[in-house]
Image (tube, rainbow, N blue to C red; front, side):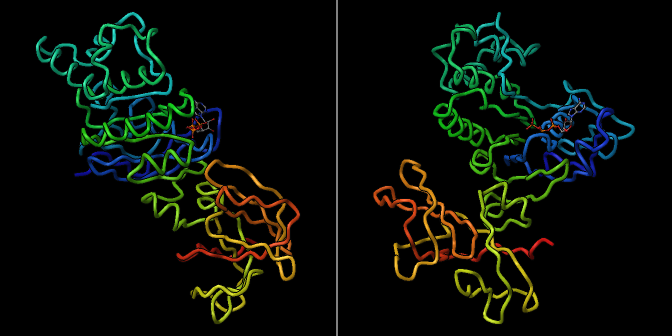
Length: 349
Ligand SMILES: Nc1ncnc2c1ncn2[C@@H]1O[C@H](COP(=O)(O)OP(=O)(O)OP(=O)(O)O)[C@@H](O)[C@H]1O
């Protein structure tokens, strides 16, 4: 079943002639987590606000569980859309305990049902012991879990999350990602999750929608987005890619690192660019016949990233195990070590 459907939705703000959201269409099946990702100002939050009913589209239609929520004739207010929201700042009620914060969305339900539901939610997020505490006496991660329990308690059709972990420190953010994803999956929740962080989107999303300037540039599974980017923008934004120039030859692609045997349906001689990530490139020290020089080494804990300058002038990055420490200035022989098809784009004019 499709839980959320957007049909050609657009929204332009008065002060800004460029649409914040431009002709957006997508379907989200029930039980899936969709991560909206893209650089600052690309329209992620506006999309979420349109779905929530905090903004009205200029054009297009929004359906939740098959019900028309917004169009040129219809506008269902946020409180009647059946959505739960979790924002960056948690927005808990400071004068209410954890229990009462979670119970907030269950007003009007019988007392015993409220108690049972709140306890079940607090158990799920691991906070039963803190039911009587006030928000100021919680850690950032605990507050975030209360906010999640509060959003999930009324069993919303759709959960909307806007940068929910961005106010947490790096360690806590990683921990919360895993916990929250587990909870959402356990609940079978349908979720739209906004983040500007590529890694977070790849981790959280069953599917990703990559945004650029109000438009959806690509929609796909994390693997599709990462390994089969359909545009240079997506390859660049999602994966710190370098771009190696080449040209199409009969056997594959001719590059400064030799011929890559990857057939392309482009005429021989076509100039192309190959997206390469640090795990696609390998090198060995080679003072005699090297084709590159180490420019810099970056320590990343379990591994190093080396920046290499090829004889032809291009810069590529390559991973190496942390036990191998090689100095800047060393001549090396670099090669493409990827064992998967590479992403290739016709070269931009
Ligand atoms: N209320 C508003 N009035 C005028 N312009 C707005 C309004 N809200 C958003 N915009 C503009 O619409 C565009 C999209 O903004 P939006 O907040 O949706 O982007 P975003 O992808 O969520 O960015 P960020 O990651 O920085 O939060 C931006 O150019 C922004 O300046």
